[in-house]
Every structure is written in structure tokens, then in C-alpha cells.
Image (cartoon, helix red, strand yellow):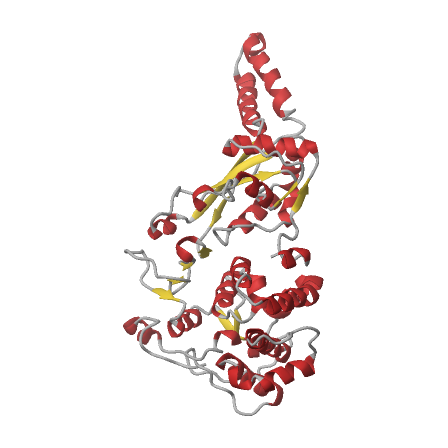
Amino acid sequence: MKRLIENGLMFGNLIHVESPVLIDRYNRALEHLAGKQTALSDFHIDISGYSPEVGDELDDHLYLNHGGVNRQFILLTTEQKRAPLLNAKFSTSRDILRDFIQDNESQLFALTATDAVAGELVNSVFSVRDPIRLFDIRQITIEADTTSGTLKHADHLATLVDQFKEQEDAWFDDVLIAEMIDLVGKSGDLTRNPVRLKTVDYEQGNFWTSHFGGLYLFQDVEHPAVIASRDKPEGDLPIKYVFGLKESNRIAKFLEYNDLVEPIVKARGVDVSAILQQKMDFIVIDAAANAGLDLRNLDRSDMRRLARTNAEVLPEEYHGLRRLLNWAQSGGTWPRIGSEHPAYFYALRAADTPDRDLVNMLLAELTPLDFRQMFICHKELFYRTYARWPDVKKAYVAEFLRREYQVDKAGARAALFGHEPDMSGTEPQESPRPQKDLIQRVGPWGAIRRST
């Protein structure tokens, strides 16, 4: 992993903590949340305040995420909103933390000027020993305060102020006045600087979790389903359809019936040929690396040569994409690639829906030879997969991502996953969608097979 770290592809955009003042605040918050402290003189933290160096020191990389639910956090600065979330157990956690910081940025800026803010992403579940408990995680509430209890003191002070205003002889209540003066010293002047955080409940409908080997829960769609990365969860679940990753036909129907994907060749405002060609190149690189070939300083002619000399070992994913590329470049007969074909999911991207990131994450797992999409959309899977690659492929991938992605992340994401309105009206013809009554009779992912 050293090569990834050196190229800024792992642990990038973390916040460096080296000030003794900030370290002291971090330790007070860590003691408050977990009863632990760090002796490190500097370390890096993610959006939640988790530090891989502190995790190594404590021999506990879940020190802010015990049980993998109700993630705790430590905020030292509002700049943490730009940092990634490491060791994510739920795909929604980073977005919730980022939204919380942005929704309360001015208040958190004032609070973190003098203290750390510690808190927790709270739901009704404290353990997920059984998969059915995942379906109870529908709403997340954030509870937060400084380590000195500024917000708690402010709430108490506000109550006493109201009592002082309403109590007829309050000016003669020395105990009440003394308590108010004491709280002002802890929370500040509420009349000039009111300290309040917005109380927002964040919905968590469709999400991915790393629990049980990885599960994608699509609950808030017309045809709900669970997709398991490994073994299907056992026991009764409050959802009818549970698929494994190898059930490509059923997953394809699920994605299509819920309008969650679109063919790359129909995308507008992107260079379709370039995207398909690069996906093919990634497949060639994998075959060449497994054959022990030298992958340094490759250009377009080298890629063509590798494809020619390794044609007999290139998988069906390559040949399917090649037919799509030929159609995109020169027209002719539209290649009908059904969901049983290994190239099928490589030819898709998420449609423009609120679940776009989650769907692209699932597609990254269904297209393991496309290392770029895996890195962008499913970093936890990328790091696990990267560790098993031959060294020549590790070197090539690290250099490619540094050169082609790191220099313009936003541009690369927009080119691959962005959406432009369709203005051409010249899309390839698709097979007609099955009638709704047929779906209701056999179920949307029954025995019927179709090609797109």
C-alpha cells in the first residue's frame, strides 16, 4: 500500500493534527467518547476524527465505531468536511457527517475555536448480529456537544433565563442569578452569540453496509431487493428478493425495472469511445499482468500490440466491449449483449437518480476488471483487491490513477458518471419493456430473460 500512499491514492485529504492545543482537545474528546487517549505528537484524521495512526497505537481501528453502528466522531475543525471517511461501515455515513457540518458550519466554527466537538450518529440499533436489524436503520440523528458541555450549558442557561423573566421576584433570587452567571462563563452570552445546532434527522433508505460480507439494501424503490456481495443472509427478511452477485440476470432486471442504470453508449456529453476503449485497456492490462509482461511506459500502439498478442487469453468482457466500440465508432448492427454476457455490466453506468452513487458502487463490484471505477466508487473493495494483484499491475494502476485521475478528480467523475440532457434523439433501439401485469404475475426478476 506504500505506493498508493506515496501517490496520494490512499489516506489522501486527511487533516494533519500536530498542534499541542488540538492534540489536547482531541484527547479530551477521545477520553469522553471511548475512555482512551493518544500519546502521539502528530497524526491524521478523517471527517469523523478517526486516525489510522491512533488506531495502530491503540490496536483498535474501531475505537470510534464499536460494533460498526452508531459511529462516533470528533470535530477539531470544520475543514474535516472535505476529508474522506475511512473504514466506512455504511455508504451513507460520510454524506450525513458532511451535511451535518455544512448545515451547522458557523456554529461549529465558533465551537471548535475553543474546544473539540464530540458526537455520535444515533439510530435505534446498537447491534447488527442479525441481518434483519439492518432494516430498522431508517433514520439517523446526530447528537453532539463540546467536551466541556457548551451546548448543554447553553440549553440550561436558556431555561434559567426564561425562568428569570417569568418569575415575579427573580431579582431577589440570589441562587438563580449565581447559577446564571456561572453558566454564562461556560456557554457565553446567549443574547449576542446564541449557540444552537440544527436538529436534523437524516433519512437512510437505500444504502450499502460492510456487515455480513457486504449488502446493498434497496428499500425505497418500486421493486425492492437486497444484493449480497458474498453469501446471501439467512433467516426471514422484510423484503422478498435477495440476490447474489452471480445472479446477473436477476440483478440486471432489478436495475432496469427500477430505472437505475443506462447504457454508456446512450450517454450524452461524454466521449463514449474513449470510455469503452479505456475499459478494454484495463482488461488487457489485467491479462498482461497475469502473464508477467512488462507494463511500463505503454502507449496506444503498445496497448494494441498487447491485445493482439494476448487475444487468445483475453476474456469475453473484452470482446463484448470491442463489439460495442466498433458500433460506437462506425455504426452497423447494434450488438445485443444480454445480462448473461460478462461484458453486460461494463457497458452500464448509473442513471441520474438520488441513488446514483450507490448504483455506481454496485456496478464497480460487478465489474472488477475496471479498476478505475472501483477506485472512484468503492475504495474499500479497491484496497482489498489491489493487495492481491501482481506487482506489475499495482505499479501500472497507481501510476495511471495518479496521472489520469488525481490531476482532475471532478473532471474525471463528470466524464464518467455525469449526466447531460439527451438532445440527439438517435439512440439505439431497445426491446420493449415487459407489461406491468406480467411483472406482477411472475415477479420482476423471475425466469424471463431478456437482452438489451
